[in-house]
Image 1 (cartoon, one colour):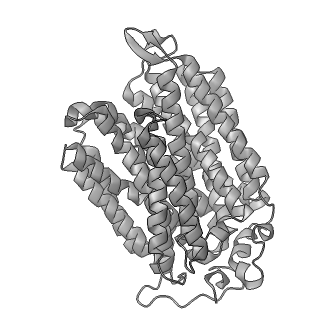
Image 2 (cartoon, rainbow, N blue to C red; image 1 turned 90 degrees about the horizontal axis):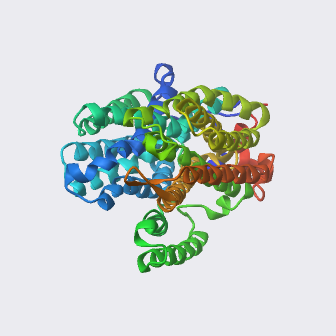
Image 3 (tube, rainbow, N blue to C red; image 1 turned 180 degrees about the vertical axis):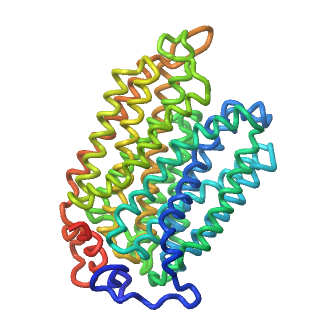
Length: 505
């Protein structure tokens, strides 16, 4: 029997699978499962933006160059993109809690590495390890699908998925406070301690799921996917510095295309693929992943430009001259909005379907950028517009895993959500490249320095609004019922997916 034929825990027709010996969950532990996994997600998401306030100071602190300092962000994007789908697949095959604990252990190791050194090479290596821990979020979603009853699943998954945005919004002001008031190594020691706390909580409160997907681990497919992603993301993130027509940039793009085609041909032939391309090609899965890429793009523009815009000096004619801490705090209301709206998104998904929730989210994000376009001259309207965008992001990030889970078998939840999280990261990488290009090329002289013009920021808002509207269009093309998404898979193969999709009925 395939993994998809295993009914989900808590469904009316399910008979619970035999628990793994010695790991029988007890109700007292399971009661805190959602809170523990969500806390893990927030800690991991904070790591993604932790060094952003520090970047302007890194060359002086480490004796490096600005180009080398930028790798503290780029490397986490690369390792997160590679390891998220891979560890999701490993968790499906060998145990999700086991891989979750290992991912948190890698985060702790990376944090300690950054805390004990000021050498740029060591810092980049530590940040690479921190980025690999991004797999915690899809692993947590997969554990929730295995362990929670249907009545709690939607709201819990919504919260877990939203932690990516919540952590990013919280991480910036917290890191800014540390950079301004303490030794910068302190934030990495704090990261290590939080990671250790996460590990203890997971071991105490999260049971190991007995559900496993069958087959062998696809080593060749993993290497092919990794090479494709690294080539693509290196070209995208470094193209502005290297030159978009340079040999390195073009060579990497050609390599990504060539390796990607060969990888896809191999994955279609192997019996136990790293990514099941046949499942991924279904409209319900493919369009959801495209929407995730566009949503990731639209979300990241908000994070990238808000703090920078309010910190621009007043002699630019539009800047407010705010401090680094105030710049970070501008995103905090958005983070709080994401916490508050994740259960609202779950209710919308339960009552009207996750497609409706995602369409609403994309529309709200577009409206938020329209607000930002017309109100970018004073602090509170800027915060208001940023919060509207964050509200849309919260609903979107909550709806995306629901759309994925109703379209894939239970045994592929970790890998499928890992791929969806990867698409968000790819969207963020493209957004970073576009924003950097716009702000670097539409400039003027203000107070003896080169600064982006107001029109540069407004153009970013228009591009991000366009991405949100494209996400809306893609979402409206999604099949309305999971049965449409599962074309070619009938009977028992869709038991788990139907159970999830119908839980709100």
